[in-house]
Amino acid sequence: MMTNKVFDVRLKKVFDTINFENTKVTNCYMGQAVPPTYMDITLHDYIFQTDKGLDAFIEFVQGIGEKAELDCINFAYPALHNVPLSLIWWSKVKMPGRELGENDLWQVAEKKVMQDEDYDLLLTKGYDALASKILPQVIKMEEVGAFVKYHMENDDLVAQRYIDAGYPVLNSGLACPPFETLCGARSMSQFFMDCYKIPDKVEASLDIMLEVILNGIKNDPVPEYVIGKWVGGWRGASALIAPKIWDRLVWPYMYKIAMALIDRNVTPIFHLDQNWDRDIERLLELPAKKCILNTDGMTDLRNARKKLGEHMAFLGDVPSQLLATGSPEKVSDYVKKLLDDIGEKGVFIAAGCDAPANSKYENLIALHKTAAEY
Image 1 (tube, rainbow, N blue to C red):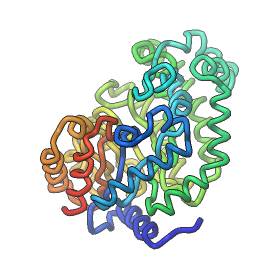
Image 2: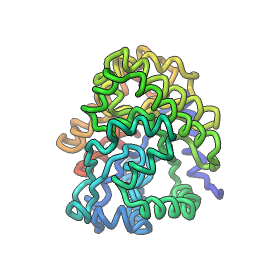
Image 3: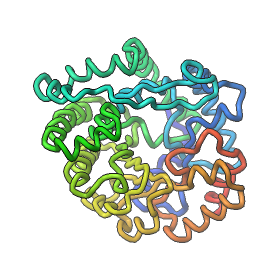
């Protein structure tokens, strides 16, 4: 693809940061749902009118970058966002302008769509049999087809738009651990009971699903612009799962997915919501300087830095509630104190998880301006 000097400089800084060779903190924009809050476009049109949505997202990021130097973007804007969410969580997603108001944020409508006997369907007839039963209950299959068609036809063009704008995109996709998918399909309370009552059946199911994920990672093409992919962690957080369950049903699958991505020269970005303090040292089992830890304000990054050292770059971690309700002074103070404590090397400064739709514009400027001037 055709690059440019600005993009090349920023791309080098991204890889320098992963390798702890950066001399200054790397400024990374996160905030998929923020642009419509401040631009003349509804959230519905932003998501479903893909050309307009992409234009709005890039224009918004460039506006931030003009006031506070940005180096990269974590995740591109959420085109047709309900499809990937339904595919990874096997849950219906209510969308703006459909089930919700035009500017209402999307919502996962979780319920038990996978019945008790569906474990046996998975174990006897395989992944495709279960997916064919579950997915039509949570999303229209023609929407899945349209989503796939859009990405097949447009991914290279979209990547070039970001390159032309001068911004490397860290995350080009999501590898969802099967624990999360079954949790969405069974509902959280029911699935957690499954992990205690029928752990052998759950583990056998996870193994089947993992093979599908690993085959996809192994065989899917990796375009030259791909830097990394999320390895998502939500319900599998240390704060939610007992150690014996986590050690058996969560971590082994995340580890194998991450190693498969590394084998394809793709950087695993551990997008870990909730608190992962208890098990943070397990990340040392992965190869050094090959992954990024992306947290949401609940995991103690100071503790993580002490335990992980320069083993893994950090992405984050300004809390969403601070961006929505705090002041620029408080945001700036948070960024300074965080960088004072964990240093600049191997650090992408960004919103924790993702900047919420109601982030104050001046707080986003304060976040990135403070980091750029630190």
